[in-house]
Image (cartoon, rainbow, N blue to C red; front, side, top):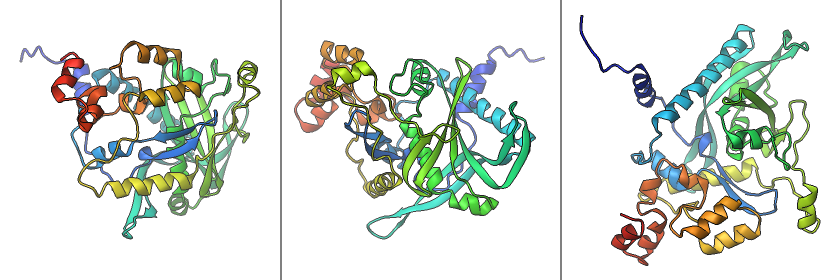
Length: 364
């Protein structure tokens, strides 16, 4: 018998996960690449979603410089298992119309007349059903269905933002805006799914599984104008979720109330998609939409607007080369490609500092 001693089952799993089977793309842009300019609850303008430079790197197949570590692939596997478990039980009860359904639909036109397509994968389509108090199906609607988008997450942020734990603005929780845009685009393009399965899909359900606490939350997502308009977040019984204002916050702001997010519309998302597609025609990457470190001016503006945590303010003041900026840059797969000299990259690009001096300041 062979005496092999270097077999590591978990490392083998991670290798397979990292180098899994070929994913067949339908082409076009993706729901996860959505972005949108909004006005947030504090009344401040914000760009949310995917950076157009990141989309350019991805579609041009530029090699990733910041790949996920082994632990991330374990987390991805847990998320996949959660989704498969849900699908299995929906199928067992006769509710599952489709799982991991690939969709492709036109979403706009370039300035040169070229059609822009969006392609994605819907986690599940379920027949609408009536249940008893225990959750047992007692009736299935053959004319209506709902779309399902499943997200697995963990940690303090998830409990606070998604479940509302200690969250004075959204005490019952609120979805991540990136997930809302992705789900909104599935709602916008769902006509092809409705026609394929002969059903009407009035809304999607965005399900969050918080795996470390084994808790869940779910939100009903609709569009204000059927296939277009504003993306609406509701409770499962159809009540619109609006931001609350803490009395102390209201007192400190001179009576100012938190306001509903404005501008989170299909029209605004589509406008950004067209802009992104136009940028893909260039041979060089577009300007950055986000910053690895905020400029001094932007930092002061965000501080005055109440957009920064005490931790970020302290880190910014302590070290002028600390990457205190947008989270989109910190977690980007192409961070080192986009910022080869860290927070000093833009200075190098503008000629304010040499590459050698930048590396020296960064400690290399």
